[in-house]
Image (cartoon, rainbow, N blue to C red; front, side, top):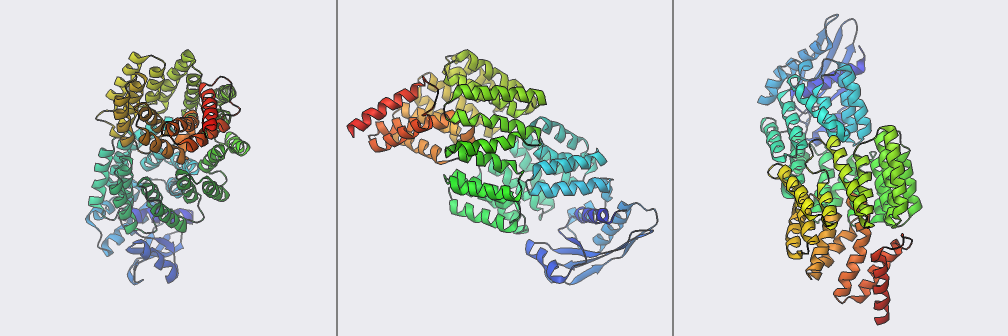
Amino acid sequence: MNKKLILVVLVAACLVAGFACVYAKHTSKPAAEKPSKAGVKWILTGSVFQIEPNMVLAPDISDASTGEILATQRVTGQMGEDLFSVVDKLSAEIKNDLSLPEGARKEVDKPVKDVTTHSPEAYRYYLEGLDYFYKAYYTDAEKSFKKALEFDSTFAMAYYRLAMIIGSSERKEMIAKAVTYSDKVSQKEKYYIKGWEAVMSGDYTGAIEEWLKIVERFPDEKEAFFWLGQSHYAMRQFEEAVRYYNKAVEIDPLYKPPYKFLAYVYDHMGDFDKSIWAINKYISLAPDEANPYDTRGDLYAFNGKTDQAIESYEKALEIKPDFYMSLAKMGHMYLFKREYAKAESCYQKLSSSGEKGTRSQGRTYLAYVPLYQGKFEDALEILDDGLAADGMEQAEGEQNAFKHFLKASIYWEKKNVNSALREAEIWPEILKNVHPRSPVDWRDIYACILAESGEIAKAEEVTRGLKRDIEGKNPIMMCSYWLAIGAIELAKGNTKSAVAHLEKAKKQAPYPFLRMQFFLSKAYLGSERLGQAVTELEKALSRYDISRAKTLIWAVKAYYLLGITYEKSGWTKKAIEQYEEFLEIWKDADPGIPEVEDAKERLKKLKIKS
């Protein structure tokens, strides 16, 4: 038996025993002192004396704060004895020597292979996957978890982790298998699986109920506190999210995930200084990982600091060149800076990736460059080429659907109603297979297209179906319903009603969506609420994120809309600046765009007056 596998299963024994510990080949005391700073109560250290013919393990259990040896065991496995049986002996010794929590005491009575896997190789790959998972190296993690399943196709927790990171079309299958094989895991892990199953259905309240069961039984279970924070964050209950994240890091100050999301939550709460404190703490814990720098890049991007964002994304890519999240976002930053060649270079690298899904994503983003410049015919050609390549590679997932969405938005802008509606009817069908549990599938945008195309009755029918699928089941996604209703009211000329619905959408949205901000600004402008229109548009144009990149036409037209709002407010200089910005971005746009011609006329008149 491989010595590395033995150490892996010793880690499993610690996990089954239900307490925070570290297993290592005999270490010096300074190295062993580090876990005490992390809230670890006990440390398991020791040696593997021999493997064959008999396995001999000699661990010591010490107090993490003092280094005092509390217990010493010597566990011997007889010739031919199953490795997991030896670990069970060790677990029993740990139980007898320490005063474990009641929940952990019950868990430890179960054989280790009955609450993990019968395959040490599977568990080794699972732990490898966990390491990648916590670094946000999801492609690597997916490979490791799938490798674990090659050794044990009934490994419930490998399916559970895959359900969090795998492509959308496979998530339902992964969580279903985790549930199917959950009779092979501990009660604590059952709660985790049920919790994630609830999340995938949009039932965050149900997920919270499952994770609260864990912390009631295991009060030092940091990951459960983290997921409680995640659920409250998703529900826009930011104070509660902060409380649970802080509880997780109180248990283990070296636990990295909460710091990342503390940074995001503080930013949502408008406290940029605290968000930077949190991300710098994350970086100090993981200076050689890409993800903290990617997160820092996001924070800068959210606050209009594109140069600092690019610098952080570059640092992430320096550490891990295939950290494609940063590569995509860096491309978006260059796009917004109008450094189109650099943006295209980033997108080309994505389209040349070794991963099929990433290649499809890159092919979508290549259309962003002409789309942002108003070169709609060029963008359509690139999207059609991308769809053809997706078909050849059988990459007909979310990015494939998004290409149809972009085509619909272009046709919509070109007033080609029939083509826009044809494309808009394609993407929901694709998404039904990709996101079988998603109640939205961009139907809010479909309703918007229908409404602005004059198909009010059909738009209202789509919206009623959306409400039926969401109301009472997924409160967060009700923002999509309110957006659709607001857009319909706006198309009907009922600006007061539109404002009321769109304000509800904004309040319930998990984060600022540019499309919501754009429609709300139009409603404010239509009802002569100029100050609120200015505030909303200024916020939208100061934030550089994926939402803005996904709605590039509205992102550019927001400058035009802000120019009109400033002009109506009597702020001539500011109006001129916005019209000039708008016209600079679309200086090489396709001919015949009404807003371009109108902006030129308005700019000319304002300059004469000033």
